[in-house]
Length: 258
Ligand SMILES: [Zn+2]
Image (cartoon, rainbow, N blue to C red; front, side, top):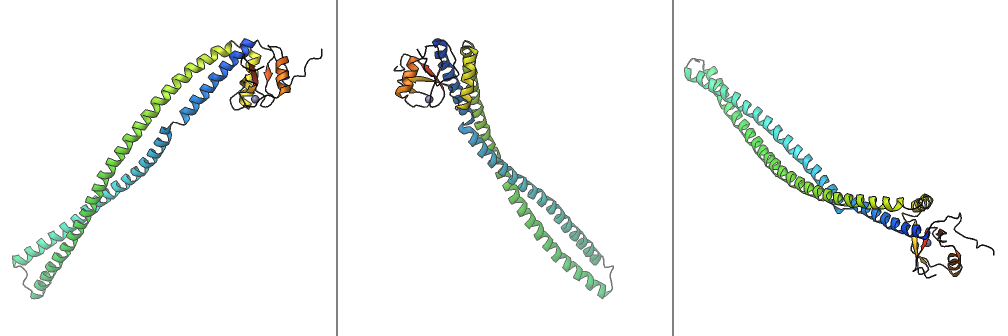
């Protein structure tokens, strides 16, 4: 009898029970990749990113408002000093005028003119002080408002981070227990079968072994044609069969429809 020409060469043998256990490893691996995917696609990631952007902008605005406020404070001090100087000079002029020490009409006239001009100058400088104080006040209001907004957005960030961390922790602990189980099952499967499985899994998007269910490969979901069905039927139970279409390890069960 001529042996059938297997399309799943090179030939690898493994006990049917080991092949079935490979399906367990596969489903644990699928679970692990689902958990990893879930971990990276938590909605909190996008939420934190967007909130952090807002926070950065608000902090920049706050720094700008604080700078404006301190600039105004300096400006106010300077303007008040100017007012003070003018006022003191006017006081001195007035004292000289009142002292009667100046007798020259020309000097008296000049002094009176200066007092008038100083009074006007003082008024102008006081207007500047008021204007600066108004600007400072609105900068202070802005600082207060932005401080409040920063702390409110910061609280939202903290909340989202806490939610993200809690979920990740949960996913990590589930993944750890799945990985442990996977290690156990994989350890009971012959090394050459595991090696082949890992190689195909890498090439085939995480799925290296698939169940043959009612003549359909559950890896690529394509139904085997009659020649392929016959080849699989003819194969010894411990032959490791591969799907002709996707090359995955095809595991036979009682529901394979053979
Ligand atoms: Zn297939």
